[in-house]
Image 1 (cartoon, rainbow, N blue to C red):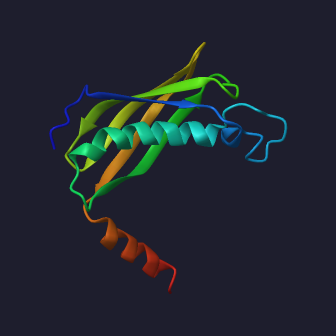
Image 2: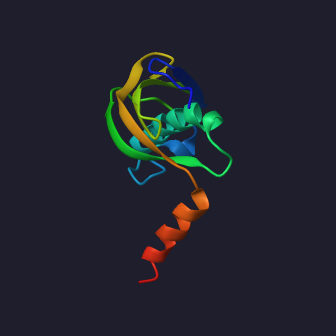
Length: 131
C-alpha cells in the first residue's frame, strides 16, 4: 500500500437534527453528539485508506482516543482531518482533528486494520451468534 506517514485526508459534514445529542436521547441538547463526531473521525480515516484496497477488502476501527472540545449547533458545517502517523501495511494509526466554523471541536488518535476479505470476516462474525 502506498500510503506514507504524513498523508492527510479531510471530509466535511453539516450537522443535522438527526446527528444531535437530543436525537440520541439526551433531550434538549441540540448540538453534534459525540458518537456522531467519533463516526466522522472514523469515516475520514477509512476514506483515506479505501482507494488503496482491493474490491473485496475493507477496514474496521480498532481504537479511538478522542477529546470532544466544543459544541457544534445544527446547521453548522464540521470538517474532520486524518493524518497518518504510522502503518505496517495492515494496521494504521492516525491523528484525528475536527473543526466547525468557529472552534476546534475534537482531537485524538484512531487505529484501523485492513480486513482483506469482507465476506469471510462477516461469515466468521455471524458464526458467533449461532453458538
